[in-house]
Amino acid sequence: MSTLSKLAEHGELHDTIRPIIPLLVELLKDKDSDVRTVTVSRLGNLAEHVGLRDVILAYVSSFVELLKDATSDVRSASVSTLSKLVGQGVSSEIITSTMTPLVALLKDDDANVRASALSAITSLAEYKESHNAIRAAIPPLVGLLKDGDSDVRSAAVSTLAKLAVQVEIRDTIRTAIPSLMELLKDEHWRARAATVSAFTNFAGHGELVDVTAASIQPLIELLKDGDSDVRDATTTALDKLASQAELRDTIRTATPSLLGLLQNPYWAARTGVITTLSNWVKNPDLLDLVQSATPTIIELLKDEDWRTRVATLSTLSSLSEHAIRVAIPAIVELSRDDDSDVRSACVSTIARLAKCTELRDAVRDTIPALIERLKDGTSGVRYATVAAFLKLAEYQELRNAISEMLSLLIELLKDTHWDIRVATVSALADLALYGELLDGIQTAIQQIILLLKDEDEDVRIATVSALTKLANHAELREGLRLAVPSMGALLRDENSAVRSLVISKLSPLAQFVELREGIQIAVPLLIDMLKDEGSDTRSAIASTLASLAVYVELRDAIRLVIPSLIELLKDDNSEVRSTSVSTLAKLTLQGD
Image 1 (cartoon, rainbow, N blue to C red):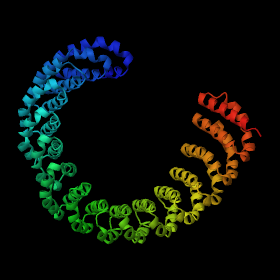
Image 2 (tube, rainbow, N blue to C red):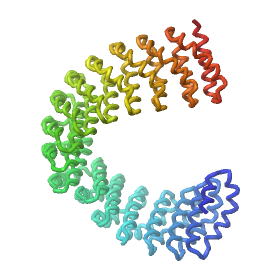
Image 3 (cartoon, rainbow, N blue to C red):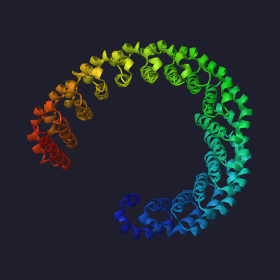
Image 4 (cartoon, rainbow, N blue to C red):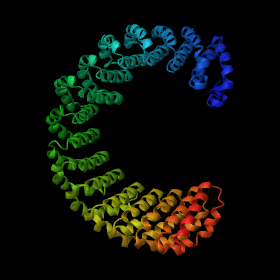
């Protein structure tokens, strides 16, 4: 039957498969439960294809009958198949007739069947025809919140949360709140996480906001939960709940309890509070709560756990516009932290603080500490520091200080890590946008050119792109004369991506008269590459040669390509032939 499912992926075979479906339906009565299970599952898969759906829908009553099968696997598979079918535009009669037996399965002896039934009921809930039956299902569904199986409890919570979109069901859902509150203490993490998410969902529905308020204090306690998924769900929940105006008074009342967790011995609890406060910074109505906690937050820069220190740095960066100047010395101190993640977070935080005009003088004073991190023993810290300097250079008042560290940044062009070399050469090209830094960058040109021979293809690619950017600055072009022949040599690079990039960059470089002599040297290599195995490459070269022919200095060299272009008129690839015709036409129009 798996073969049949694969064949069904081909629409032209559907007419052949349709007569087979009644034969498969007969197998739903097979004595062997495994056969019944596989058959109902395969029919569900086949029903996903438009060309087969109508035939299978005619047998919905057979699937409904299997909901009473003696074997739990058959019942579960039938629920799954019905769930797929009801989501495909079936009639209201089918929806109505399916709901009652599905609701009955909420009391099934098998946990997998109960969980499957919950999922199917959720799918059916979008259809109005199911709503009466769903209202009748709420009491047994609420009963499943105390089910002996944790997966069923989790599924029941998720189902209630999704059903809350139905206005007429919300009053019934209110009756489940006490049971849901108990599930916040469930022994299984999945049930706790699902319940946290449910309360987050409820807060979006006006009729349930008041009962959601009761969950805030228990949610705060979950910030010290032993499971990371529960903690993550809780920080998200507290952020979303805080966005509800009706809940802010409750949030304010609970804040002392929240801040008390900053002294909790469990690192995750402290980090969870920090993350929550960071989210609240975006809420003007709660900003004063976060500001009042700033001294305590700053103290956490000395926390014994690196994860808490990193989270604290992130929060302080989000508070950059809210009087945290006093924290900057402590942040600088963390640039020498024993943990590399903390050091990386530190330099990134300093860069983000610079967006606040009032802090830039203090940020300027941190630059010597950042310069030290360019020599950090961990590559990730060096990488973060390069990125930080690039960010700081956006602010004019910091550029003079940055110009003094360019020599150290240039040294990273020789770094043992390829990604640092890539980051550095790219950063230097971007820093050239600022006139105050051009003199320092000019001293790096020869070292940058050497990277065209780097052993790593990503470095070579980044260098080609960087040199092309640098050529836009007239002050640097004299030093770039030697770069063009070296770039041309990469037309023979073993890496196709490098070759393609060089081909694409020759035309932009040719607009600068100072660089055309070097491009002239590369033209014979381009002509040789017209025999490249790749049709895209042949086409790109022909197009490049046409664009270069507009320059008088290059025409004599390019004229030599005409015989090769004539050969390309016989190329197997139509795009190559078309480009060759266009190129020959352009060369002819250029004349002498």
